[in-house]
Image (cartoon, rainbow, N blue to C red; front, side, top):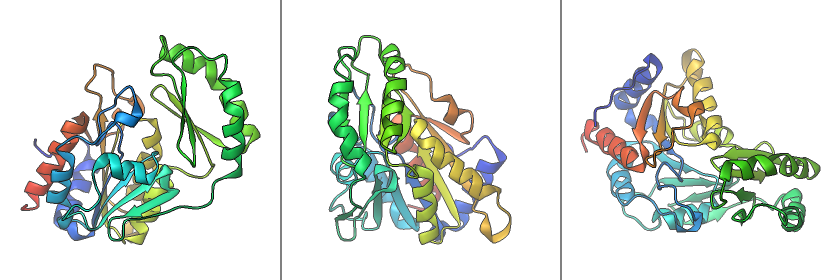
Length: 282
């Protein structure tokens, strides 16, 4: 594929990345970006081209990081990232940054569970007892996700559950993160934008590329926009990539309308990584 962002900001971000890749960070969401969306999240696996593309690209950059709502260990397992030569400096930020796994030592670091998550975990089965058939609860440890993808009318089921889930989350001091046919309830003040900004600061990055596909990635888009709007040394050029669904669904407008570059699902993300690696001489 050709590396041609269609916005001035994206063009500037790509130019900065290619000029000084040793201070560039490439960041990726997992589901819908590196892994195809599937009806059962437990069956999600990274596109087979992801690991080879990362191995080709990563040595040229300051860092590659996966920023996901999944538990870090789950993303590592489903991605096939552990023990891969060439991915020694890969980092996975799980639970929107609450957890961290570094390939260098293979250890997952995480804080203690938020008390509100434990309380809501006990309450949710009763709250969901009258939910439409097909609605199910995914326990992520540091967060809880209510999925409606398997329901006969996923959107109607989501609309029905929205208010009671938000009320329950508020009682326990939790935030609600909407996505495609899912509502995730998690501790407040945690999102992909906060996680990505902290990681870029840690690596002293001078450019960033972020690719995502769903509403949970809006915060990361906001973070990149905020960084590239700053002047002087405080500013960081960046490229925003939208991974559009390949299932016939429209892309999430909150991302597609702001993206510098739109690719077609995980396969398109792999093509993007390969094109970047080729541009960098890999």
